[in-house]
Each structure stands twice: as structure tokens, then as C-alpha cells.
Length: 133
Image 1 (cartoon, rainbow, N blue to C red):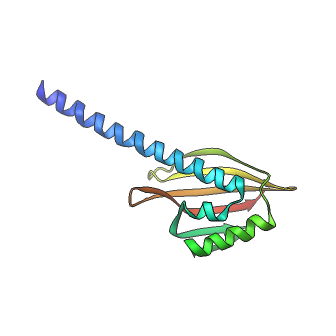
Image 2 (cartoon, rainbow, N blue to C red):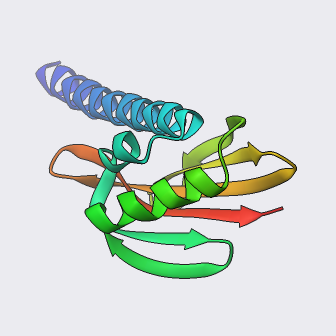
């Protein structure tokens, strides 16, 4: 009976950690969504890893968080957001969270893909891509 309670406790703890992790992923994705909708590179940079892989219109580059802020500031100036929605979010087979969205600016539509990575108990964007549809 004690062994059964012990295993039940372990299962509860594991499920609790998973639930907290899923909530943290959803929270960072929602926060990133709001910053992209607002076209705020400064706010977006708060959710970026120290180094982030950025793909804009086919050009892939690895930037520091500060550099990425300037890159996104220029992108949002050239392509001001009219609408941004998350279409799908989940986790890869390896457990890495991701989200796919659609960004609209004028007549242009972009598919946005971002990978989230846990860093020091924080969920941060490790990779983000804006590709024209």
C-alpha cells in the first residue's frame, strides 16, 4: 500500500511539472504573439534567447539578442503588422516547443515559425522565421 502511494505521488509530481511546462510554453507564445502584433522589436527581444537564429525572407542569420532587436525593428518598419495569429503550436518528438503563425502586412503574408527553448527556468525563442507565402 505504501509503495502504491509512493508511485502515485511520483506520477502526480511528474504530471504537475509537465502541466507547468505546457503553461509556460503557452504563456511565452502568447506574449511573443502580442509583441509581434504590436510590431514591438524591443518587447519581442525580452523573449529571445541570448543568441537567436533569424530567417527573414530566405536569409538565415544567427544574431545576439541586441542585434535581433534591430533586425526586427527594421522588419516591422518595412512591413508593419496588420494581423498576426498563431495557427498551430506543439512540441517536436524531442519535446522542443514550437509555434506556427501567420503575419499580415499590407498585401504580404508571412508564415512565422518559432522554436522555444528552456533556458535557466525560462522559455525563450531560440529560432524564428518569417517566410513569404
